[in-house]
Length: 379
Image (tube, rainbow, N blue to C red):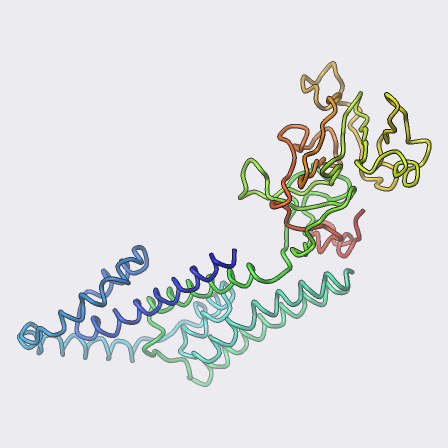
């Protein structure tokens, strides 16, 4: 990951250098800006190669001397049009709401454009980190209130700039510079997300009901990567690593798990003494002179349940009811959803390698459908 980020950052620097090089060396006396800007946006390789070609073109003084009068007229017209062109308040506000800082660039305030673009993402991620320490509804309200106030201030500030007639057209608020600015802004956020140890996820399915509901948003510490049995974890789906899943860790490397008539059986790798010490006797059974724990997680995690309407008679998926014993390989985890009969999990596609673990889920950050769940600790 570190190597990728270094290469990615270096590529961005080269791209920006090439972009400005083209603008500086080739657009001073040219009327084909639109064509070349589009090439720069959609074909970055053009931005790397063209500056060196373009510089040679500038040496051909005869070409420009023959058209100097025409070029001067075009430049003068562009300057006059720029001076006379008024900026739109609505567009400036919209750009700031869409991407805080771009609106300031549009009205010619580079200092505030850079200030908001650099500090605002850091501020948001700092709030997320605070929410992992103080997980409650008051922290959520405080965080969102501050964000709303910042946006309200930016709207007020933009209107104030227009009132003072300070909105202006400058060299760096052309539309192509704004597109470049936005691209760099997104790249900056991607880099922050790669390094910051907090990530926000949204539950989009019912597989973890009623522990985690559809619509719950939760924060994950990405440096908390070693789950214990019973922990709820977020991981990259082994069959499609672009997708992230959230499930409960049922067993880890060395454990044996099995299903019989929807009952989960666990044989921890630590052996019989560990079982006797850590689980109630009512949940321990003996099979072939070895101790197994039956439904070990329903004891402390009340959200785990089966659907009584899913029966052998109306469901052809037999793995929901019975599963032969599975030995979990080292450095992998067997996971299941708390909504046992409606979860796509290790019963169907296998175990989760350690390298795919993103982090553990400790609490709900917010659910806009049910604000009472905000800051709720989950087990």
